Image (cartoon, rainbow, N blue to C red; front, side, top):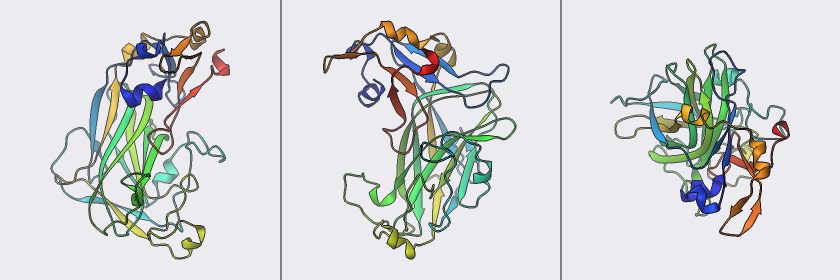
Length: 310
């Protein structure tokens, strides 16, 4: 159901759905006063208020754009890639949500962080990254990760996505090399559902490798076969944050109290029938929001009723 609504912006009632059942996670063990880890039942998608955060040269994510120039370098060495810790690679022992503190200590991962939040912040829908990037190489990867940082400093991965710049115009288009050191706009989108609790911080990682979840790019616009990794290029990517080339992330914030008022047990769906009027098909389907992988279509999965709520 979600993929229909997200792409077309259509009303739930078009599909004859009684409810959309959503899991709104929070990744840390609950503390007194914390929110999240709830199921909600919705007849229509909640109103979204975009929250813009701008990348700054001092590693901050801030709601006000300051007219400062500069850029942040990101070293990309295919022979020494950033290791995958967490995420959606099911074949890895570290699949899921993990502390990213060790990853953040690397010199090939750039981190940008907000101040501690004064109140809980719920997001539900497409998170959009609008970046300006240049590279010393004629091909490279740009990968972003959304992170929740607890008051004690534990940084847990939530969602991530990225682009291989040779396909910046789309995977259905002819690959094109970059002009080294030219600034290119990069637009990335991923589907998100999460509650950042009070005194937590929002963080974004920017990097050029995430191996083995993302295959290695030799950064030379050559074939992506393993043989071409014998002569990879170490690239320096720059994330720009100037008035002429700003970079930002836009979060889809929604009313947390509105979600909490619609808490429910999704097993009630067993007595409901959902009909897609475009196909006439019927069935009971639960939409459980899970952390996504790269690509705008991979942020949500549609599952049968989970065992823990039957």
